[in-house]
Image (tube, rainbow, N blue to C red; front, top):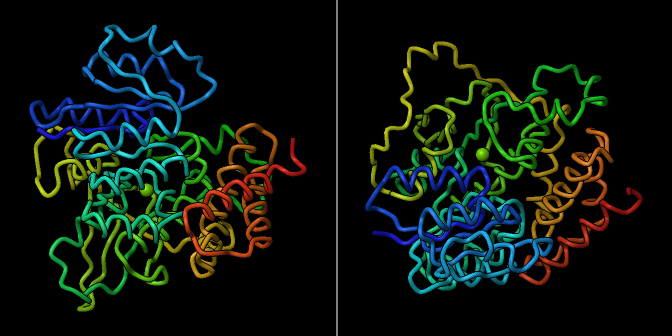
Length: 382
Ligand code: MG
């Protein structure tokens, strides 16, 4: 029986993680949960799963609100990022699922790695903003970082048993988002509603907009570089609108290995939790013959400047990927608040990156660069 802590338990990945855990009775015990601000769902999960520890992250939630919703007096309550660090390092925790939105997951992930906890990682920002430090902490403590991101799970699966030095290219697939076929001149007037309509995956707001701009793929290039210890210029992106091939590895003999499956995040979540096992949790099966038309195309880099921005952020190194990510999160926030037109998301990111001189991505520098980039985006917008 493995003891699990889930950071971000009320979000899309968090709720699907609980679904998988409930499909595997006797394998996992949920001992700690954290949520940003959804008190009611957090309490409902803690009550149902008998979680002994629950953390609410947002200051906007009044103290006592969570206590009122919890059915018994047995759940200990924590608050803020500090609270996430505390529950992620509890002695009894074996694996921490990091599924919070954005860079807020860095500190608890680092705390957990230092404590030797294995991480099932959905929050790619942790590696984008602080990849070097994160990987070093994992090496030092011997803790594993298992990817939940579907593309990285696919790569991880295709890389099982790969001989040292045999990888030629990592090929990330991208759905292309809702604007793949939209004429470029119509991008200027797209609405929040249009951008939130993802063709194949059902996800949270930030991630869905990142799929529309392809920034999600930009972040994933950097994530793959750290996770699999390859230079980011050996990580390619190919648009695959059906989202059935989740990514591919080309080996130096020319062979390409792909992982296929229905677009269902529960599969990569499960693999990260039970790796290296393959267990049957009765997830829907893919009938291969139903997918007679799997297509692949080059991404339009002029229409989607995010990929180029991510490659230059990676080349600049240090705090630049952190600045790119923070500027993007903030600009997406403004877009969702209808304070910024769609095309200005990437303009803001490029502008803020152009004003940043990267320094070493030590933890304090990352925090500073993150808040500087957010403020820089907000300037002149209200
Ligand atoms: Mg992904």
